Every structure is written in C-alpha cells, then in structure tokens.
Amino acid sequence: MKRQILKLARPVLSPANHMIISRYYKADRPLNDVTEQRVLLFAPHVDDETIGAGGTLMKHAASGAETHVAFLTDGSGSQSKGAADELVAARKKEARKVKELLNLTSIDFFDEKDGQLTSDKRTRAWIKAKVETVQPEVIYAPVFVDCHADHIATAQLVRDTLEEMGREDITIRLYEINTLLPKEEVNCIVDISPYVSRKKEAIAVFQSQAIDFDGFQRLEKLKRHLVAGSVQAVETFLELTPAELRSRFDRVQGKYTYSEHFKQVNKEVTLLYAMYKNLTFKRQVYAESRK
Image (cartoon, rainbow, N blue to C red; front, side):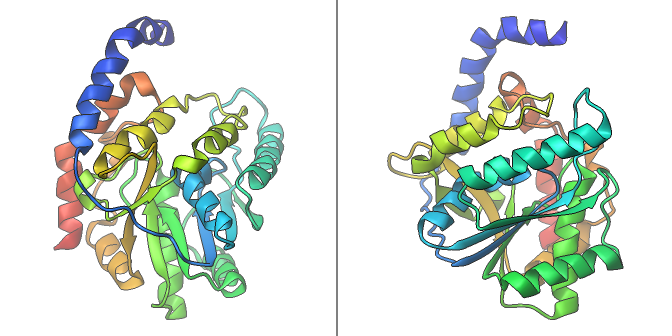
C-alpha cells in the first residue's frame, strides 16, 4: 500500500524534490582529480562500492590504476525473500558481474555475518593483509556517521588497522551510502559523467536486493550543482588523513544511535525527506567531530 501511494505521488513529489535539492547543492566548487594508481575500497556489503564510488572506481581504472574491492560481510541479512545461503551465493555472483562492469582489478570476501561486523583482532588482521598486499595510495571507506552499523564498523576498521600499522601515508576518502554528508563536509568532488550509464548498468545487477536504488542514482545528478560548468553527474567524498580520521571518528564514536535519527536516501520519491531528516543534528555531529 505504501509503495502504491508513493508511486501515485511521484509526479508531484519528484519535481519538487529535484528543485529544492538542486538549490541546496548550488555552489561553485572545483572538481578534484583522482590520480592514485593503487586503489583499495572496503565495502561493508555488495553494492555499497557501486553506490558510493562506482563511477570513481571506473575513473581510476580508466587511468590505468589498480582497483581492488574488499567486501566485509556475506550479504545474508540483505532485504530479500530468499534463504540465507542462497542469498550469500547470489550476492557473490552479483559482485563478480560488477567486477567486470567496473573494470576492477580484484575483489575479495571476508564473509562476516551481516550486522556483526566489529573492529576485532581477526578482522583487523584481514584488513591489514589487504593493505600490505595492495599497498594502496588511497583507501575508500564509508562515512563514520551512518544509519547502518556495518558502515560505521568499516570506517572504524580502517581507522584502527592503519593506526596499528603506523601508516600515515595513505589518503582516506569516505563515501556516502545510506546517509549523506552535509554539503559543508564534502571536500572531494569527482566528475563521473562518462561513467553514468555504466554505473546504472552495474546497479541493475543487484536483483537480490528488494530495495529501490533510484534515489542514489538521482543524487549523483543533483549533486552536479556543487560545481561550476556542465557536468552530468558527480560522486562526493570526505577526504581525510589517517590522523584526521582517528581524531574525528573518536570524538563522536558511540555517542549516538544514528539509525534513530536518519533515513536511507535510496528512494527518489522520499529523497527530500531523507536528506533533510535531522540535518541540523547531523551537522552538529560533524561539527563536534572537528572540535
């Protein structure tokens, strides 16, 4: 019933959403180059890599870079009607298809159970091994303010592992999935215009998920208003040093239950509500992380 109501409301809500969100992002910021040649992305779940940084990964690959993606959970808790073991197999099959579409150098699976990802010794050892093997110049991980615990845990794993390794020479770019960065926190904007159709094709692979993806796809086009000039779509990140990630993560870690405050931005028709739901609180959390 809810889905039918939203479908009926879409012709009215979507244009209004687009107009208001475009105004929210209106700015005159420069685009950023991504020149690193060894790239490692940690994805809590299969599809997070494509949603958050699929275009950027393709841009890296097009420049000749090695692009490696490490999936941390097994997908058994995904929103689907299938049995858990069948879902895990389906998610891995989808990941392998997307590997080809995004032109990734490699993918790997840690296979922690959905919802049980933590920064424990075993998981950090696996993360450390990936970093030692790839020797990345840049690591992509989810933002640390997010309504999904596995996303936050992934950011923490990167934070903790790099500290244990004493690695201060790697750039960190935090990507958005369920919960957007306030526009003031975005400090890296990547033009993905040549890769929009390929990213759409990759997102269409994720048939095991019983959720909408059109909100994510609309956002990459609406966020183009952040920059001057004619670009079709962008992906946005919070770029930090390892020391900055530690400082900012630690100031807010465990203080709030974000799932009580934020709504996913996966659905286009409810995009405006999801973006503005407790935006003031979100800005306060990020400001607190900088103090």
